[in-house]
Image (cartoon, rainbow, N blue to C red):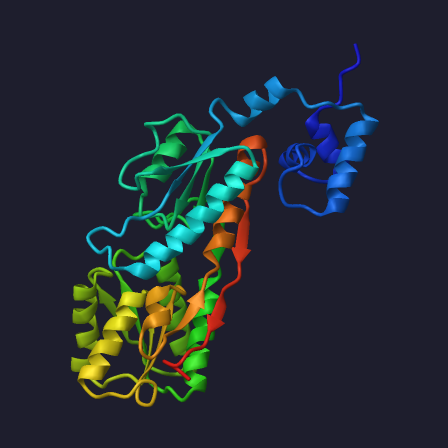
Length: 334
């Protein structure tokens, strides 16, 4: 008996992945209309008709995916983070529903083994993240927004990642500060150090070395405003005060503004301050803060797309999707 043409044969002929074929035939997913039409034409030529039961088995037993986001811990005032995660989560949920998956939120302090899932998205994974570890153990696909970090620094090869290019983004912030006249630029970060902040620190040190200036990194114990105030004090009280600062968390930048006001240091006249995440704190500070917009909605949508492809085509190769950032110049550096 002649073997019927399957989804992989159609994918091979169309030059796309099996997951793309599955999405195209269901009228889902992001692709050009030309690609969608070509896939449908090949399927018609081979008299291919998707089998609902087989598709259900291919997708897994649940039709559920999870998303894990780091909590704000004891600092609910970290508005930039909250707003960033809500924008990301809302976009991810909408895209999951469009692709016929349910999305649930997993506790980042625990593994993902308490509910049957087809896969998970982990935002800003912590070192040896428990949700990532649980999915790896269960053989479930995981997409991380921000690369994985391991305590042994080995990382994890062959994974699905959606991320901003924070090496390039940090360079753009530093170039902007220097272009506005800053000659002694410091960087502020906060524990826990995730991949985004590690990339920012690495890029800052490389930039300083390339420009022949001394690197000065101050790390806060947490993004909590109290700890941020302490860290800002270290910049003002220890050594020469910088004339430019890139703060990776908005509460750090706000603490710098407050300290500058108390010391009668003019911003941006004497001190130029930039931060990351285009949240309410950056927009309502006085002066408004120059910031990076990471486009969290796009990150969430792309992560769901990538995870669905990984689920529906288990043999697909892990891949990386880059989402551009945008430098929003405001009064704090103008």
